[in-house]
Length: 291
Length: 177
Image (cartoon, rainbow over all chains, first blue to last red; front, side, top):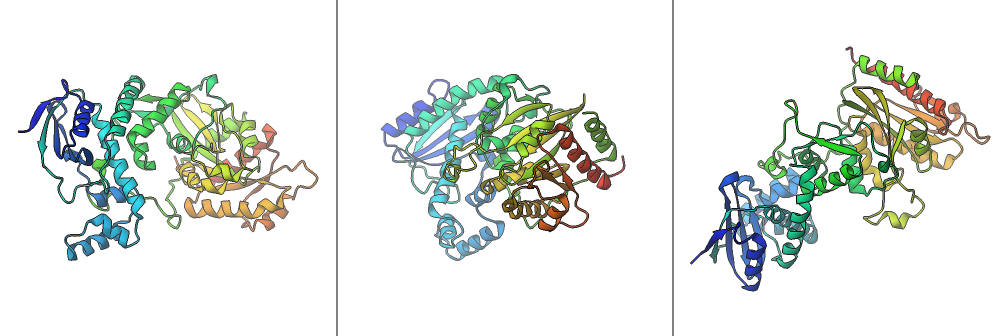
C-alpha cells in the first residue's frame, strides 16, 4: 500500500525523517501540478540512492561532461566498452579507463544528488507517493554509496531558511547581475575567496545567475548566495531580464545531448575577440585625457 | 549602462594595485596580500590578491579595471578576467630582473589564451636601479611593435599615460562605427 499525501501537510523533511527511521527501501514520487514539475527519489534501507527530475533528466555521462570531468570522446569510448560488457556500470568503466578517480566520481554524483534534493526542499506543496521496493532505472545517476539523509535534512532546512532571505533580494535565478553605479562606502576593502572572485569577474550587466553558474561550474544556489553577499555589501544589484536578454534554462537542461555542453576551452585555442568600435575607443580616450 | 573592461596584470608586487589605485575614481575592492605565504594559498579560504577599480566615462559608459592575482595558482582567473577585455596592461617592476621571466610567461599566457592589444608598463622608472624601457624590451624579448611605456604606478598622470597608450593600440584594431 503506497503512502500518499501532500507536502503542504507532510513536508519533505518529515518524509525523509520517516524514511530514515523506518529504514525504508523504495521510491518517493513528488508531483507539483502548479509548476508542472516532478521528482523521483530512490532510497535503499533508509539512505538516498538517486534523485531524478523527469523534466531535466541528466545521465551520468552528461553530468560528468557538464562538470568538465570527462570529454565527449572519453565518454563515447566508455559507452562503447559498456555496450560490449552490458552489465557493467558506466562509472566503473570510466574509473577503470583512468578517466576519473573513484572519489572524484562519487563527489560529483553526490553533489548533484544533494543539490537536487535541496531544491526540492523549497516545494511548499505537491503530491507525494511512496512505493516500497521500487528501484531507479539503470542509467539514472546513482550514488556509489547510499547517502545518509540526516545531513540532507539539516542542510535542506537551513537552505530553505536562507533562501527565503535571499529571495527577498534575488527573486529568481534568471535575474541579471550588474555593478551598481556608485558603490557604497562599505564596499571598500572587501576580501574575497577564489569562488567569489570568479563570480565577481563574470558580472557584466548581461549574464543571469543561471548563466554565471553555468560558466563557472557552480550551482545556481551557490552563485545566488555569493551574489546576495555582494548586494548586501553594496557592490552589485540585480535586475529583471529585458527583451534582449534571454533568460536561460536551468543548467541541467542544457546538457540534454551528449557533447552539447560547453567545456573549458584549452589554452591552445585562442578565443576570438571582436574588436571594439572606434567611436567607443574615442570616447574612452577623451575621458582618460581629461582625468 | 555599458561597461567595458581592461585587465592590469603582472608578476607579484609589480605594482598592479598601485596602478589601479592611482587611476581609479573609486577603490572598490582590494584584497589583502598573502603572496609570501605559499602554504596559505593552498587553503580554500585564502583570499585572492586581486583588485578592481572603475572610471566613469559617461552616464552610459563605465570602464572597469581588473588587476589579476599575481600568483601562479590563480592562473585560472586570468582567463575569466580577460574575457571580453578591450586590452591588457602588463606591469613590470623595472628594478627586479628576477621577475622578468615571470612577466614573459604572463605575456605569452595572455597571447595564447586571448589575443588582445597589450602594452608593457615599465614601473618604478623613478628608481636609480630601474632598467630602461629599451633594456626591458630586450630582456622580455618583446617584438618591435609592442609598446614599453615608462611608468610610475603611484603617479596618476603616469598611469593615465599608460592607459592612453593602450587605447591608441586598441584604436588601431578597432572597427569602424
